[in-house]
Length: 91
Image (cartoon, rainbow, N blue to C red; front, side):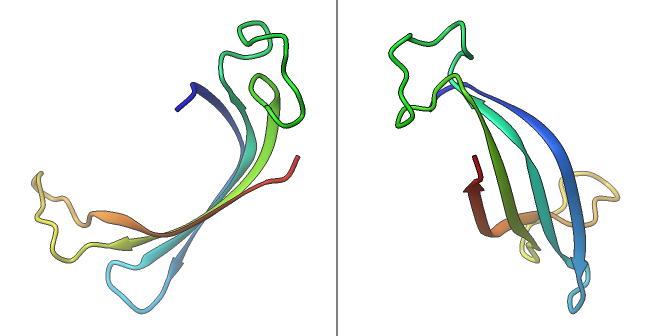
């Protein structure tokens, strides 16, 4: 996996009713650079090899509480896992 640098521009989190604690729908958008950045990557980059170029992305995922996970700290309420994940490179 290449090194990445993310710049988050928006983050939204919405509870999904029906469970306690609720599932969470999370939407994130921003830009990401894969690799070492423009100065650290090979000069033979092409549009098919986007390393070093910022790419705009949008990602949505659902976090679901894990009812079987034991609490590891006093007062800990819930542990979540990713049940669905969708990412799209916009640019």
